[in-house]
Image 1 (spheres, rainbow, N blue to C red):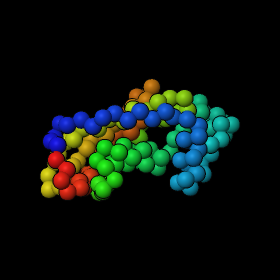
Image 2 (image 1 turned 135 degrees about the vertical axis):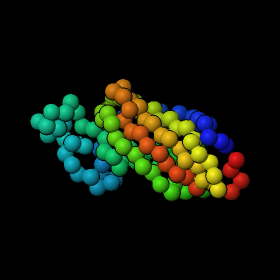
Image 3 (image 1 turned 30 degrees about the vertical axis):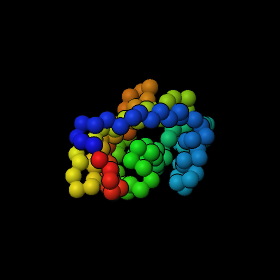
Image 4 (image 1 turned 90 degrees about the horizontal axis):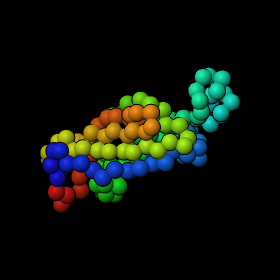
Amino acid sequence: MKAGDELPELTVPITRTLIVAGALASRDYQDVHHDTEAVAEKGSPDIFMNILTTNGLVGRYLTDHFGPRCVLRKVAIRLGAPNYPGDTMVLRGTVTEVADGTAVVRVVGANGLGHHVTGTATVSLPEGTE
């Protein structure tokens, strides 16, 4: 593995169940993540995913690639376009640095509206990872 290597894409269908379950699992009871009437009153076209669910999906993307023995040392992400039900998010990653058993990966998750999530993650690699 070297800087410039690209990780395989991960396609995530954005469903109501994923949005609501992610909010409940992370104890985020904000109405914008489950109540279509309340969110409409606030001017949003539909419920949308919370950052903790997005963070979990980014973590899954990285551990799916690097394996269950890798350790996420740092995940620094920023949200952009909301993930609404019925859309699809495609996660992509590019290795930007490899040194001393760690890799830094630039992650971008895009949906039909644009970039939903952008950021970097530092991953400790299992011994023997090249």
